[in-house]
Length: 310
Image (tube, rainbow, N blue to C red):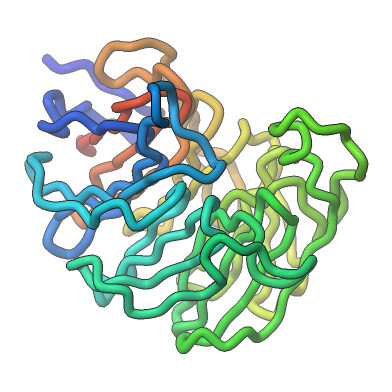
């Protein structure tokens, strides 16, 4: 009998042999469209080898068939893809930390909208400086977490018109990452951030922000009003919500399962190189229409797994 992973009633089996192709780089994030195709944001292997990171480089979006075989790729049009998300119309949103952009694509890769100036960070407090994720609200508005270069959340209309921004805290994480002197103070209070790594808008339009270095999420209205928070999270990186409204949060070396109010329902994850284990750090996730959970890891190349709900 295949080994199971999970907690409580949330049980999964790893789909061994998926994907069928080598991910030649870091699978930073993954999203699945209505046809079951998986779109993988890949930080390509740097020139000379190694593991791709959030700094400028050469990256791509790789598209896999439902069985994990190669479907297509969009070429080397990205720098360091970080967050990838697909809406109900199968439009694909990509946040690129290297280019300082958010782009919307057709499934073919055609660019339908671009926010930000490629290669040029925005002014302090304005879009974008190494954005981390982008999600649409039920009304079509787009929310972007601008997490590495500054601690901000931005809201746009569906057509890309900037509506508002909020958040406080100096970008100390990126200073530390680059080996620079720490000159600021991280935000720790309500409405402040220390690396907003993901933004997710639930069906009720509440805005969830994974405040990674503070090991919590904060919840806001669409107007940026602070509502609540939940802590005791392990470096939370990404959120996937299942059909029942249960939140699956990946980060650290685990999958954290929570209600919408933040109550923990379970946590699971094993360190290791075997199928179903995490060799590095779970970073991006998605739940498809069948309830299967996809997880991409950073810190190593060719780390993408699919877990079937049982």
